[in-house]
Length: 216
Image (cartoon, rainbow, N blue to C red; front, side, top):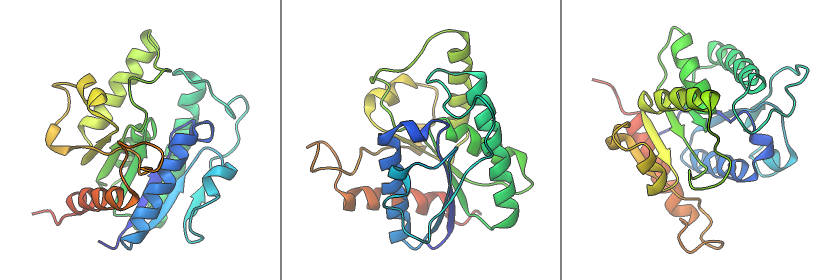
C-alpha cells in the first residue's frame, strides 16, 4: 500500500511520552509497508525525534506567546495551537499529494478540519490513544464542548483506533463500530496484554488497506 500519510499529533504531544511512543510505532509500521510519512507537532521534543527514520519529516507551528505549554484541560490556548496546526496542515496538503491523514487525540479534530477546509477530500484515521479510565479527563462546559467535537471527528473518520473496550463503551451507540479497531500498544515486553510490534504493524496495515481501498 505505498502512499503518503500526514500524521497530526495532539496539541500536547510534547508532554505525553505515551503518545510520542505511539507515534513512533505508527511511523515505523507505516514505513515498513512502504508509506512516506510526515508529522505535524506543536513543537519538537528529543524523545519524539529520537527514533524516527531520517526520511520522516517533522513540521512545527510558529511560536505564539502563552501557547508554548497549554494546559491539560480544554482551553483557549489549546484552541489556538490547534488552529495553527490546521493552517500548517492546509499548507502542507497544498504542496504534497497525501493519500490519508492520521490524527492522534485532539489532533483528530485538526485532521477533520483539514479534510473539511480543503478542496480535496482526505480519508483520515482518528485515534484516541489514552484510555478513558486513565486520569486527566475533565468535566464542565468547555470539556463537554470538546467531547462533542471529538465525537464528530470520530464519527466522520474513515477508521477509528481506540485503546481498549472500556473506551469504546464510552461511545456506545455514538460511533459506527464497523470502523472501530482496538489496538493496544506494541510493547509486549512491558505488558502481557500488549501487542507485539509485528501484531501492531499487521493491524495497522489492515486498517490502511481499508482506508486506502479504491472507491467505487
